[in-house]
Length: 289
Image 1 (cartoon, rainbow, N blue to C red):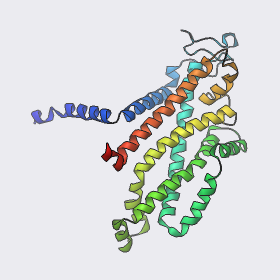
Image 2 (image 1 turned 30 degrees about the horizontal axis):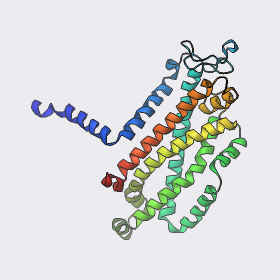
Image 3 (image 1 turned 30 degrees about the vertical axis):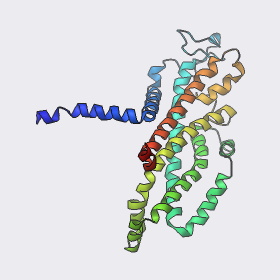
Image 4 (image 1 turned 135 degrees about the horizontal axis):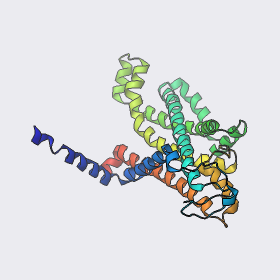
């Protein structure tokens, strides 16, 4: 027994190494995301300085041992603000992805399975998609008091039609399969057919879609904050930091470089994970590889 159990750790290490070799984008993107998540969770310990503390005497200090990323025009520590800003970006990105996937999945299943509702639902979704997402988000935020919750809702609404169209297309294809037609002909209840046969077929494309929605939501939140209609200015976010420092770009480029670099790295990491999952979960791409 001991002889048979001994190679297990080596086999596990070999499988992990093989997975990393075959899917480097997932590993690289996942590592960056994991590191960002840990930094956001342990932000009070990573950055001991209060991100809202203002010290005008230290305004626009260049990066140094005392201020790793320098200070902004109000003397606030950019490193602390960048670390705490990761929290908002991750919360917004994940929340938008969850909300849009859950609502879009329910509507898409109904549109794809119940043909009598299909045309009505899809005309409404087409109307929503005709409105530019950034303009709709700006309008919703402008009509309400700026807050993180309002920003999440404003970004999630334009993403729902895209999820609905994706789920509907998968359901329409799966519904024509012989085993689904047999279940319908056999008198199975609708909720059983949807739960057993239709819902599982949507999981793989939705996982990939969720990664792209997360990246898009993070970027949209930064754009809204940059335009002044996103998260309140007193809350440290990467978009707010870039917006408040744009006038000092020539004199103090570090005030924009560090939050901008973090924003780009996180979006790159999410897209890498999405591309890797697409290659891993798509049977056609997997066979080609």
